[in-house]
Length: 110
Image (cartoon, rainbow, N blue to C red):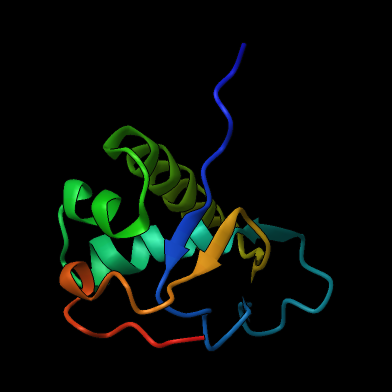
């Protein structure tokens, strides 16, 4: 029997929910989930390790690696093929401020 999926903790939802190349009026859309976005934000933007990211999001390191790889593939597809990237959905909860030890007190209470 498969393990139940754990909710991933994120510090905040993205400020922007889509990105598109100029003149991409009817371009195909690719969905990036909010938890995949958070993995990319923590690893690439915040320069965290996969282990630190996993601890902050409340999941295993292998789960973070899988999310991160899926996200990078989607982002690359959008850049290379001129597709629209939409950020929405996923299995996540907003951080309630309890993860301040992991994210440097950047959590916001909801």
